[in-house]
Image 1 (tube, one colour):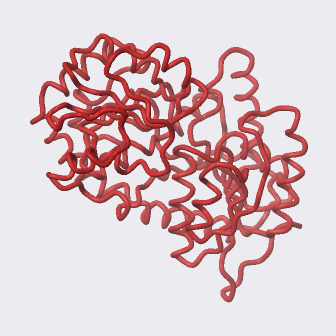
Image 2 (tube, rainbow, N blue to C red):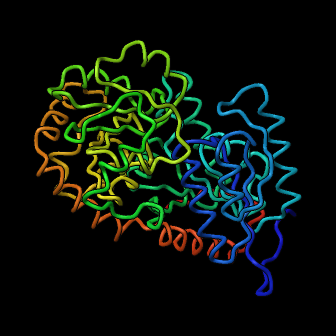
Length: 391
């Protein structure tokens, strides 16, 4: 039996099993474990040692264990499952919290319900795939749900996508949260000074609008759609700054129109958000993207595609201006043209977004809801036979 008892004298131990180690998932996990450490939990993060997650989680106060794992399933999966099992036995957690598809696959195969297990997809893997691969991913998620005491979604739309795919589970929906101390409201005069301090390849005059896209350069984040939209939009002399790196980087650079700047990955996205007149994220799929929440917490308006979590992120009055269909360059170009041509509208959108985000998407509230979920699961008797249950 892997589970240990959690008495009043000892802190609840949660093991976060994580792959990937960069981008939004890494920031979500880092912020979550920081809040958990402040709340008195013993947080352990098992993840690949390369990338920003290991360092960030350690700085946040978590114990970090190396779990060598590739992003995608492959011939190393058996070894990854065995290694995950050894780490779990050594850690003896009260709860396992597996983040994203690969960790959810390896963690649930290693434990198979013997320890209270939370699986958080951070966007469904089958939405990223096509054909037979998508079918296999869907079949696994249906099977793996029996070894999940709870599937934790970051948006109601993500949960509904899982249900539509035939996944039968006990569901919880807890929105992503932002560390509001790290993303404070921007001062009215701060954008110009922040912009002047950035490592930009050219000097951008203060009166030239800057649009920022923060995200891994990948098919998911849809920067290829954004570049087609930028070419068609009436943006004047505005600049589009892409912050991030990834497998689509070379292709995107070859196809970039004038006015597009590639910055590469950044250990701190705050200055880029604070310098932006508009943040755009043209994703093909998400659970609930973190970068828009961070931008709105600072008072930066956002333009999103209508994927899981986007409508729940935005104030209702923003939908006509700030939400477009995914993979629709024409609609994205039209929205860019409208927003770049109307500074007053951008300012109003930024103010209302800031107010709503800071009241609803505080990571402290997110961490508190997750802790209550852990406590609920730890208090339940462990069944000898895992059964599927519905919400």
